[in-house]
Length: 261
Image (tube, rainbow, N blue to C red; front, top):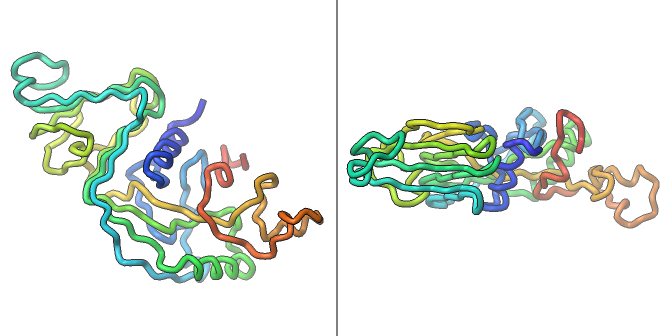
């Protein structure tokens, strides 16, 4: 059965087009380098360790971002008035809140406010510098590098570890939509939770999303293309002379328990 990190990573990549930090509270920086283990980025070092410099582009505002699994997640908002009028298990009378239920492993609820993206200015220069670092300074060809990071002023990330997981959040103000779960001024707190692999509620200054690039690999051998001529094949796809940098995929780069997939 897939681990929560894999399910969460795939869900967020398909839903928002970014890789997701695991655990969600991990600090990710542009220029971080490392491997992909069980579908999660594992930082090992940084570009500066290999003598590679880069410039950052001016941050781009993305506004709020939110995503929740299309299946197996139920969300019910409770106003303070409704909590006063009827007994809602786990929710104090007169308090607003939200009940979230998960029917499957890896169910996701994600909300982040005031997001901005910072990225490396010149990827072409990065590609050339990484080739040099690989040939002359020992940069591992199986590493990926963080080329863009999304920072959020506040974020809530909930990931279920199995079926029948649930969480009850209380709030000091009425909430009405998923993005409200990232509100730092809503006074959100966990009243009760069960079966969650990860839970971050209205946490400040997070870097929950990022993008990574790596040397492209051959679809069959999983070997970086610049090394393929050593295989002695006459096939054209084995004859690329230069390492090429591209968006890294889970299938190309993930390692399970330290062994290539």
